[in-house]
Image (cartoon, rainbow, N blue to C red; front, side, top):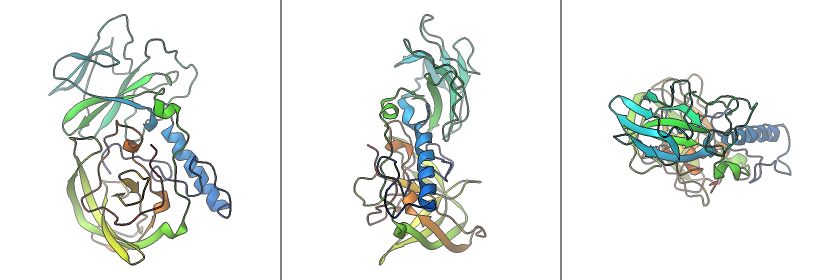
Amino acid sequence: MTVTDAPRVRLADPAADPAAGPGGGPAAGPAAGPAADRRARRRADRERELAAPHGWLSLAGFHWLPSRPEPLPGVPGLWLADDAGAHLRPGETDGPRVQGPDVADGAYDGDVPEGGSVVLGTFLPAGREPVDGAAPDEPAPGVTAGAVTAGETSAVAIELVRRTGRLAIRLRDPHARARLDFAGVPVFEHDPSWALEMPVRLYDAPQELVVGAARPGLVHRLQAVGELDLTRGDRTVTLVLTGGPGDAPTLLFSDEAPGVAPWRLARPELPGSLTPGGSGVARLDLNEAVNLPYAFSDHGTCPAPPPGNHVPFAVTAGEQAPR
C-alpha cells in the first residue's frame, strides 16, 4: 500500500500474537510449543516497534501549516506552507532550536509528495535532558529517515507530512503518554479456525479507489489490486485487496466484533505463481489482524477500508482496541 500510516512490521505488518495474553505475555496451556514461541517472538517484535522512542506510540501533535509565518503550539520557530513547500524560520533565539541535516540556523525549506512523510529534524523541549549514548532510532514505518540520531532519544521529532494536498507537521515525542503508559496491545486468544484458505482473484490492472481517513476531512487514493472471498460457516463476503508497486496486497476491513478498532489490517498470503488477471487460493490468518496507528493516537491519518469491505460478523481474532 502506498499511503503512510499503514504499518509495516517485521513479521509482515504489525501482527498480533495468537499465543500472547492481553498484555502481550505468553499464554499458558496447550498453545505452548514451537509455533507458540514464534508467535510470542512476533508479538515482542510488534510491541517493541510500537514502543520505539519515535514509533507510533510517540505521536503527540498534528498541526496544519499556515499560509503565512506563525508559531505553532509547543514547536520552535515560525512555520508556513506555500506552493514551494514547507518553510521554517527561527523564532526567539533563547529557546529550543530545531536541529537536522537539512536545517541551517533554525531554518528549513522542503516538501514531500502526497501521502509522504519525512522527519525533518528534532528539538529538545526546555527543561528536558538529552539521553546520551543511545542507539539511533530506526525510521518509523512509512517515514523517510531523517534527523533522529544517537543521543536524541529524548528529543521530539518533527515529521513533515502531506495529506489531501496540504502540508502539516506531526510531532513524535518519546515522552508521549501513550508510550509511557504502554503495557502491550490486547489480543484475542489464538484460534486456529481463523486461519482460512479462500479464493482470490487479481485484477488485470490496478483500479484507483478514493477512501476516507481516520482524520476527518482527509481522503486517500488506494490501488485496488484484486479481491478474495472470505467464508465463515455459511456466510461469505467478497473483500477488496489494496496494494502498490512492489508491495504485498493488504486487506483493510471492518467487522462486528466488540472491543476492536473501527477497522483493522491483515495480510493474505497469495500463491507465488499468481499474476495479474489470475486466480488461486490465498491463506489469511486473521489471528494476525492488526491495528493501524490511528487506533493508538488521535494523530494518525490512516486510510479507511474500501467501500464494502465490511465483514458482517464478528472476527474474534487478532488485535483488540488498544484504548
